[in-house]
Structure formats: C-alpha cells, structure tokens
Image (cartoon, rainbow, N blue to C red; front, side):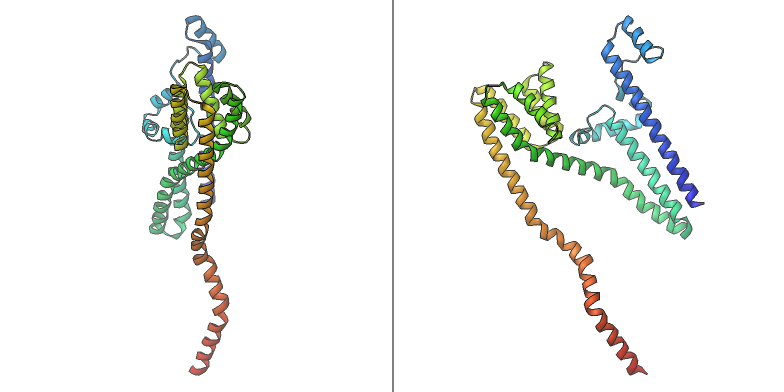
Length: 306
C-alpha cells in the first residue's frame, strides 16, 4: 500500500513537471514570435496564423504567469537577484524556482508521512515535520551553493581573460572587439565569464553605454573583482590613460588573489578533516584497538563472578 501511494505521488509530480515544461516552452515560443513580428495589426494576424491561436498577447512571459499565479510574485522580488547571480536570468526563472519550492515542500513531507505511517501517528507526524524543515531549507541551500560555485568559476577565469584582453588591446584591437574575441575564445573553457562578456558586447552593440554594460557585470554575477575592474576601465576611458596597463595590473592582482585563495583552502583542509576524523575514523580505531581487551576484561569478570 505504501509503495503504491509513493508511486502515485511520484507519477503525479512527474506529470505536473512535464506539463509545466511543455507550457513554458509554448509560452516562450509565442513570446519569440511576438518579438520577431512586431505589433501592427497585419503582423498580429501573421503571428496568430503562425501560432495557431486567435489573437496574441504582448505581455512578457513572466507577467502573464504572475497574473495567473499571483502567489509567485513574492518569489520574483525576493529571489530574482540571487537567481541572476546563479546564472538563471530567464524571464521564467523566478516562477520555475517558486514552483520547484512548492513541489519540494509538498512532495517530501508526503513521502515521509507515508513512510512513517507504519510506526504510528505520532512518529509519522514527527518525521514529516523534520522533513518539512529540510524541504524548506533545501532549495535555498542549493541556490546559494550554485551562486557560490558560479562566482568561484568567474574569479578563477578572470586573470586568464584579462591576459587575453591585454594581448588583443596591445595588438591594436579596440576594447569592444577585444571583449568579443575573448568571449568567443573562452566560451568552451570558461563558459560563465564568456557568456557575461558576450552580454557586454551585445549591450554595447544595442546602444547601451560601455559604462552601464561594464557595471552590469557585477550586477549579474555579484563578484566584487568585476566591480573593481569595471570602475578601473571606466576611469581609464574618462581620463584617457592606457587600457593595457590597467588590464595588466588587474590581471596580476587577481592572479595573486587566486593564489592566496588556493593557499587558504589548502591551510583549511586539516581543520575540515577534523570532523570526519573524530566522528568516523577514531570510533572504528578505538573498537579495533580496545575491542579485544574489553572482551577479555568482560570474560574475566564473568569468571570471577562464577
């Protein structure tokens, strides 16, 4: 009975997930066609024919989802910045994250309640409550972990990217062309930083000032090194100083910071090993060393008692 219930719950959640993915894909397709064809009456007719629907909506995807599900608007305001830092900058990312949190909050306690039903109502409620706390913390913890790992990848890639920028700028290429060239070169080795540099290039091509585009690097990643780099490049452009010198000094500074961070992690390794050493290795070692002696003492005490 318990296995059947768990199977039905998993099947229901899987069906909801597939339906949600299909719906988001359809809405995104409609938004792309809407953006491509424009907003005149004739173009709306072409859009309707392409989509196979009557009429067309011009609102963005996430605005329509918020109107259908107003409860998810809070998640957009609270977690959108963190989702962007984690690399999920799509319009539907806050909605998907909120839906995943709701699914986890519903599924894990239900499974725990069904699993603990054999042990009695009190234990079942206790187990479900504990897993409810885990389900509440787990999505946030995974999001924070994703942010931390992405920022670390960006920091690790930054000195190499600046070295390539120095080579391109000293070869006579403009800064915008150098950013595009480096972004393409780093698209496979350092994907996160390569995507951010491509975003900067697209924004400058779209008419956004280079200052705003460079400051957007920190806004989208939360990496302090990128804020310092953007400030240095903006000041360099305003005062007319050499960009290659600024890039070379920044690359040396960030490479030194990367080495210091690696040394710090190595120094912290013995401290981190203390917990598994005390909790897992030492008990087994004590059992192996003291186990035979304790058995002999117990046997001796039994012999004296007889």
